[in-house]
Image 1 (tube, rainbow, N blue to C red):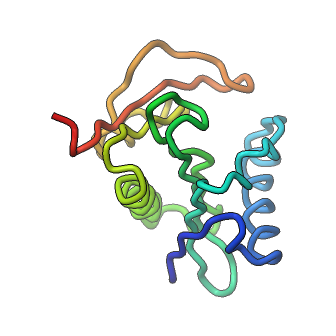
Image 2: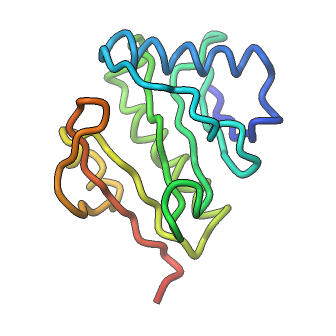
Length: 154
């Protein structure tokens, strides 16, 4: 398994296709969540796409967003997804660590924000994300805002 971190312009057409297919397979088909996945943020110059290949397939993916793209003064992690065939191997923990590492390297003075599915709160607590605010519905799925404080803040 190999991890990659690329901007939109560094992605090959095939890799972009595979990323979008994985997101649609899981979020739209498996979770029956009909939402506009192509939101224009993927092609932002500062967006980082983090993914892992295994046997020529993308099995894990997330995107890191620069401060101000979604949350003022905070970077963000979103579209966290593990392919069905790769689940149960703690790959999600590796993926989140890759995302945290990328956000901290690119935007070290900024907190990392995420809108997590509510049932995954405890999972993200293991990675030092703290719950802020109340549950809200995003595309009819209960979510919760979570923040991981920047290590460089005093």
